[in-house]
Length: 376
Image 1 (tube, rainbow, N blue to C red):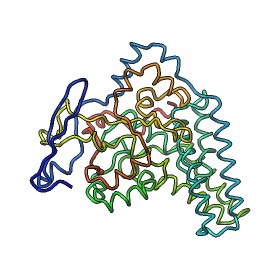
Image 2 (image 1 turned 90 degrees about the horizontal axis):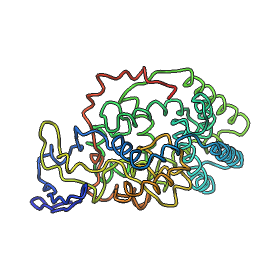
Image 3 (image 1 turned 120 degrees about the vertical axis):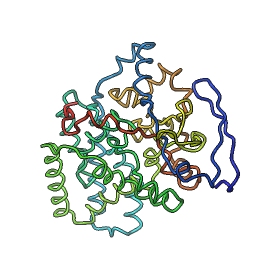
Image 4 (image 1 turned 60 degrees about the vertical axis):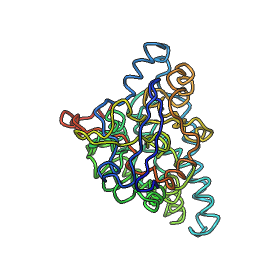
């Protein structure tokens, strides 16, 4: 934490220009210290997509679904059911149960979360309805129905990145006020799966569809049969796996790594003028990619700038996109470690829940959430 009347001078390079700016002192007004990065600038992915397509039109050929993904997903689902059956007579708080739930279960269910993410972009099958139905199947080892709701919320995240009304990935002001301290951040990182599950209902609402009903009926029926045949411990394995997948687990680092403005990417909030906390020239990048080995377990979700630039390119083609358009991606800030992200998010004072880029949501007035095209 900075001493009361001490400021740090920071130099940063943006768009080939060097800026030097000063971090506010710890006794700066609370309006300066505790605020998001408010901006009127549009999100960067649309414009970068246009530039990449103009220079590399061959990138368009990378779009489309990946046929082999479904076989991997089926394998992960069957693995989870097998381990649940294996642990049917093992006490939930037994060391073996917890170890298997953390090492196998959490890793597998994180893969299923992100398979549902691929399905939300229709990247496993040609027809959208087939992706929706398969997402219901993919949801089964997670234990709680969520796949049907994830797609429309995730579409909003892409279409209205940073919108305070429509992007449910953003922490609310209540979360930021209460949890922007060491204990709060540790609590957030430990229980972040609950924040991602519950926050959307408080931010915006979506239309209930027949796919939501199918998701609920299929999940509740499967859970009931599992409990009847294998007992509550098997179902408990599913729930613990899902909880740990979004907790202090290496693969869970992607939740924070993707859009939080951390460490040297942080910018000084030197003033609040007309609701804007930072100049456009100093607007920090708001999406970050990770190119490490954990991508092998998470459908390359670490290629997150690439994914937001081209959300209809399947996970297997994202490394090729980066190779083709390397001049666009190599200069961008990168995350080196998802484990490291969790650590320095929790224990570095400069990193808080306020470290997100937000937009004022003027688009909300012209958007009907219930009328979003569910076939996209």
